[in-house]
Length: 420
Ligand code: UD1
Image (cartoon, rainbow, N blue to C red; front, side, top):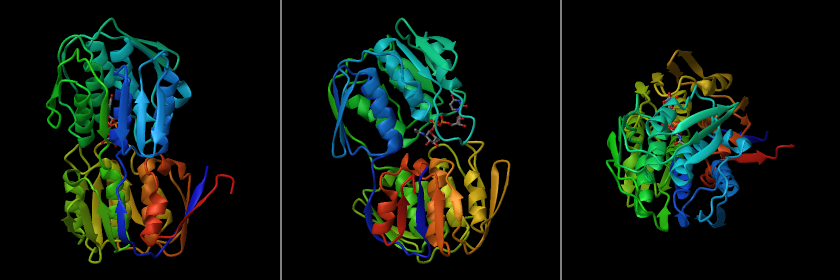
């Protein structure tokens, strides 16, 4: 595993463009399988999770090539129904191939999805929905074999909103024999982006952005071209990097409609912002105050994916900040690493109490998941001395050029090769 060296005591200043959204790109790539033809995706982030999805699609028979950040996927011929186990186990989003392969081929063999260890992350909501739609589910060791003779129309209510299960349901329903109604859906913007993409290919979908989504079923898709929108989590991580360094970071192309909750929290800590066209201008020179109590929640609540980077910033704020994590049971792992850097954080159950301000000190710490790893980089920017972040591969699953961007803003990050 590789590591990065993060120089501390920096003040980030300047403008940086925001990368395309990971959580939009992955289900959309899976969605390309639904169409026996070509899909062109612009602004696709060049990150390891996307490369992993690319490999899974190629193994199923897709022809894929990149032109810069444009990904051209030709799924005219899908000749394989088994998703390579070593690949599916690497990421959560492999689960999306269940819905799209059932829609396309009526059959898929796939291992349980992997991904960041931030909680139990079962897939029962996905499987219950498929069973409702008439799918047979067999297990062979660690493999799931799903098969159906056509997908039937249903009105299905999820036990709680799940981003992945909502997306998987939409993917499967596009080729269902009758309309499918999904209730208690998640409302995250990336679900809307998946629907917009599928609509541009000819799918009949209504209600995304609400908790009730109706999919016409039986759609005949045609070639399509779609631009992956900006990544609200990558934008948020850069904003919080600016905040912890009390800098002034401008984010070109930040997704304005998707960042409300973070911007409210940013204002609470004393951050100031304005919009200049599509660019978010942030000024963190007066960032100081505790954020009070923050509760992560499904959209439009505070995103769980920004909880760890926010926690890093909270260490440097005056007074007590309380963070409650309601989405994943095991998402406070970064707290222990931050404590090694001098943070005063007490976690109990789903609550973390962060006492500040503390002067963080550079130490050797270990990334244990994507966003927790990013939080350690954020912390390192404000620490005294150098922070070594081990297992930086986690970070590269979701951030295309995080270190280079930080360096362009005045940071000092050096990436060491795995062997070094
Ligand atoms: C997606 C995002 C992830 C984000 C999360 C919550 C992608 C690729 N990943 O993950 O970055 O942190 O949404 O915003 O888009 N659950 C079940 N059974 C299921 C499915 C989910 O119990 O079958 C539970 C999960 O364990 C979790 C909660 O529901 O506690 C929400 O998970 P979900 O919204 O499904 O997250 P993901 O789609 O995995």
